[in-house]
Image (cartoon, rainbow, N blue to C red; front, side, top):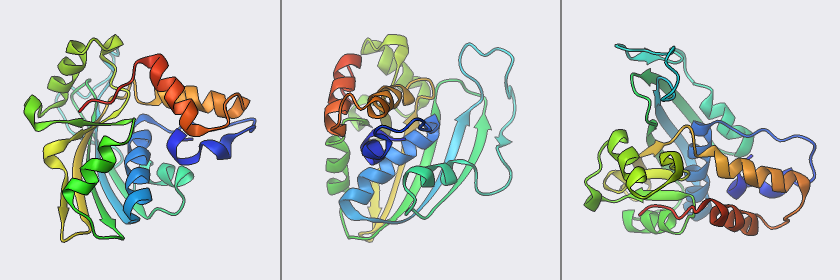
Length: 222
């Protein structure tokens, strides 16, 4: 399930599968660009946090672990459960940090576009935030501090954190970016919308998204 991508398909169903934090972040970004320009294929690397901040029994402490060593990681096939038309291959590794995942993403777009047009798509998406160059933020730790300064509960970053400086379009159709994904937070608004869809209390996905964002105080950074 993803509220922007397939809300109406979940209406009245007995069950729905909420995808993982990484997959949620991928689906938001891919769906937004697919709607705007069409997406031919996606190649993405997930640099995953080793553990949540309170999980003192997990690691690694001093290693970079391929997770898995085989290709693809589960994220690509999981994206296809929401966006079955997308050609995607994902790779993943675990690193010694607790403060979010980082994605390195490359997409081949169907229509020619510009960096400026892509940034406009992100600016108009209520769950894609832009980490602006002016903030000086270049790491997950700095981004976490930023959310704390914003007064976010639990320093939650419910939206994708796309690094503005990394957004690039080469030869009109080749897109690149880095994005940060807060593993404890980004699925929260999706889960709320999923409940509404299953219960059919709100028919219109945009209305549910608006209600959820307002309740959480979610105004995308940037």
